[in-house]
Image (cartoon, rainbow, N blue to C red; front, side):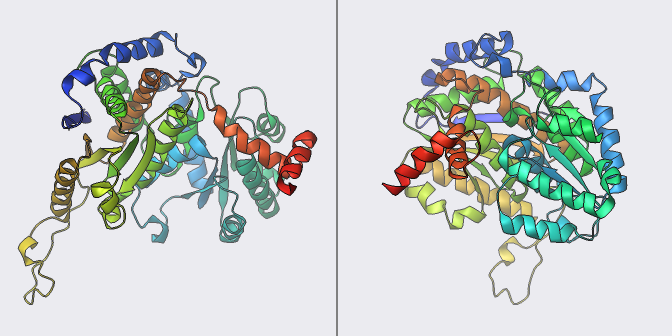
Length: 447
């Protein structure tokens, strides 16, 4: 199996090799903390050996069989979850899907998503769309009480039971939740839902290679064994310490750039299918590193599209940024630009070329321009958009995130800051148990 490659040659105008090599001890220490489980957050590193562990178990077959059953029963499957319980599956499905899947007659169920927002119109329109569909639900929540997915599940469960009756509806609901406790676990036991477990030692943003991501991806018709095999190959490749380890190279380089004043990392793709991969990556790094008033700010752009909106800022704006570019070696299809006798658009100079060849030259030209403009550039190369390479990329970014967080000096596996808005929201909604907070926040708003 080919492997993704990391090229850092275009950062050396900002940092030199010595600055990167100076971080080698910190990176080695971060790797050791991960592998020995001695770092902060070590109760959340179950993802580290997940690919090899899952591939050697019966779990993959169980997920595949459940997916086959749902594909046979449903025209649409709604995956309900938020954050890591949504973005990983969405990222892989969008990367592998036909770009116009929504408009193509189904040869299997469409996978839709809910519970990732609190949009009344979104939920109304989803409910209307499902009103004449055979649909099923994958509900993903460790507690069963997270506000956004809990609202969506309450509404869609009631709709499914109304359409089919409670007994039949329960056959089309799969719950991915805690092994023993929580509201969703209790409901699943009472109603007899098929269940999969969210392991206690795997946090949401690292959960795409668990049933959380694997079941929706399998329902969408993609090869989760190939995804896991790709991740497993990166698990093995990144276990060998040293200068050839892509995880260590990336973690050291981005931290060297951060120390040199580059506070913003922009993940760039030149393939529109990778848009949601950027969204998944933003959560992974933002939630892992943004603590103690530290952390590289993660942003993402889709080129060449965003060159016509963000390109000017990236080229000439404040020099606090660096780019990590994901380049895809080979397109899955062939489209040749035709010749035109009138040539009014002036494009005959590229007639006969593949569209992807033009895209690759736009990519190369953009990288040269940005580097010349003072934007360091890390290049990550994927052979193609296929399950095995996406599996490699997922594991690569996950492990580099853990190492990089330790180099930065934070616990990469907690997220204390996300609770603040929830407390305010519960107080404003006058949730039982929040009476004192409700009183305090009302005084503040009325001051």
